[in-house]
Length: 188
Ligand SMILES: Cc1ncc(COP(=O)(O)O)c(C=O)c1O
Image (cartoon, rainbow, N blue to C red; front, side):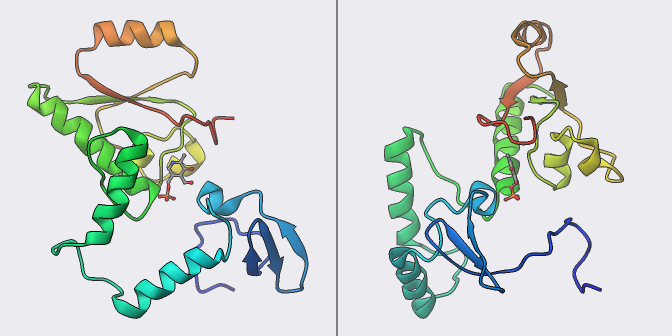
């Protein structure tokens, strides 16, 4: 019996530690970590520079909120802008928050153009997160079940239907954004 809310179908394996691309469970079995925390552990496990950076920061200041100047955020943002060619960075804690931010930017853009219900086009087999807005943009009935009503201003289309998308864009003047995963996960 677990004390945790039953939100994930967890496998009966508990990892103890990792090194680079390798993981070890509590029984000492070694695994190649091909999942990488669902593609978020980009630099692997226990990299000495990452461990040092986290430990140095934690020993100085654990959190101070975004009400104050944070020069390290500025430095990281400068690097991200240099590599992406984009205009500004928004730091957040999770994928769904990044997507919420994207919805808000798209909706604001739509309202500035005088559109009452700014509409975002997504793929039917997409996965964008588990908050109400990102579930609204997620097709999988298994994760949507029991959580309606969903957000308005979302149109779901089939993947690879470029003609359908072109037709939609011509006829629906409320469309402000197209959101899709460049690498299809749940979509296959
Ligand atoms: C493609 C995609 N988008 C969004 C999310 C949501 O990210 P998070 O779990 O960090 O909120 C996930 C999570 O697995 C994802 O795979």
